[in-house]
Length: 344
Ligand code: EPU
Image 1 (spheres, protein in one colour):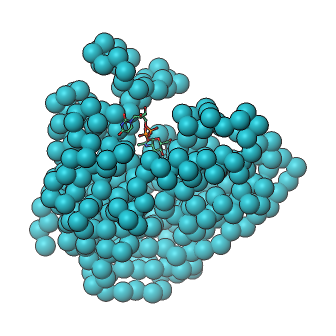
Image 2 (cartoon, protein in one colour):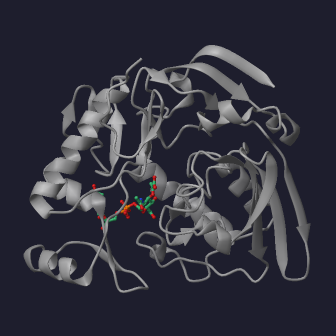
């Protein structure tokens, strides 16, 4: 297995934060995963393409960055079954599937990151979540040193959540994701922006529209370093929603199947007067307030401080606590609410 010491991570995280790890391990096959010692893997952070990761300190923990590649397709009368190795790029895989006539993932085009990271936070966009199309996930268990298969139900997919982000966080690595795409394809064009498409829009047309929408709204990390939506959209009770709506008639909202209500964090941040605001080389994007941009290659701690400023301002104005979607990684591992000083 390839191993590098004192390795700079700035080019491996889309927020372009300067941080260094004492050791980065790059397993390139399932066999090489068995070479990871239990001790080392227990203390490490698993990095995909670094598009949802904030290194809070100048030092990062041991990093495991799997580089398994490969796509295998089988089919029957009803479904395409596609097994994809974790280090495949998500968007390249979506394009591959659409170009081969295997539809369903078109609404998820251009989401940054790797295939292995997709189930962890159940990536979603334009009315579709990846969990809708996952049949099974293969996971390498660090403690038991063996491969385990999780069915879709066992993955506990929720809004930007799964068992891999909750109970199993840091306890293993997703090696392969197995997708099941029904041949009886159903387009999803109800989300704002896609409803401009004609009702007979094809999957390639939907993908093209999604790409166009994302390119207009979301900054390209290559030019403006960012990690997409920094916070999750908050989900509140009917009562909280009713109180808020009385004061803010134009507030966007989405009713959930269980009766709770999802609010738009970007709207809350914008209404708190933070759109375009900058501090310490970090700022709220001018077009999409849910995106924090690292304008001046600022250190992680400045992004942490800025995220806290956003949380406090929104809390004061709306009494809503915004929870980060981005994962906060300190020198000694992942932290829930980053504000810890590095002791090293
Ligand atoms: N809005 C504002 N001001 C803003 C941003 C948004 O008022 O600065 C309002 C919009 O006008 C709209 C509502 O908020 O009424 C929702 O905005 P948008 O459709 O842009 O989507 P979002 O809720 O901000 C979510 C996902 C995105 C995903 C889009 C499209 C989360 C945290 N984010 O954003 O996912 O692409 O919907 O489906 O759920 C990501 O996770 O990194 C990501 C980009």
